[in-house]
Image: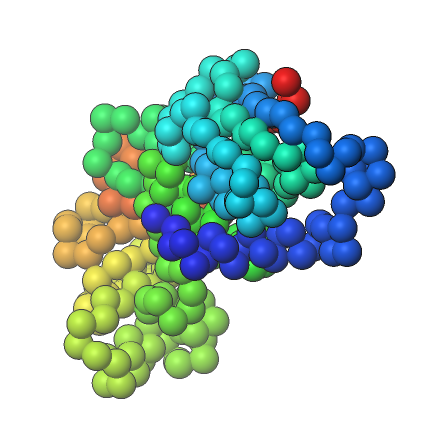
Length: 277
């Protein structure tokens, strides 16, 4: 869930970027007394995400605007479905149109892509997770959209979990050394995840007591062997070169998590539009 404070902050940022000193076209063309209603429609099928942000855009511009949701957050809609209706002063409605649609289109695009991938994993216990490969300044919103689409969130930031990657291992002098440094300095409640690229590194991580092991860019036979060697001694996360076409075979290999940056960097915005009525 997004907090009200965060929603307001993101909306203020969007409106400051878009409106700056005002909507000069609308102010010249539309009477300040004009009132009406507009409806946001989905132009294609998908999962809707971002309704709280769209609402806040309009309420921030004009508290007298009335927003009425016609679908639920996270609902899958067909093309042509009415998503939200906004009524009140037309100037305020038109000035908020683009900012509201920007939030809805992008977050719905991420939620839709995530939902498609989650559906492909049906029948397997493996869970789909995102990465930190997000748009600068928009990570919380994009990870929220992943959750709306049925995925789970990986680390939100560098301070929200231990993940020892290849450069950390190089700097520390090895996997065992890196894990020891974390154990010696960090709270005992921290779980340690280590990235490995081959079975030798996998065995080193297991022997050093890693709780989660990321199998980075491994092919399918290697993933299967890693699952066999691990024998449930640690959680396994498959990552790297993950595509929709590979999802089911990777899940069938027996990993616990499958992570992909594509959820937040290679999605396509959902086509939505606002029409006055």
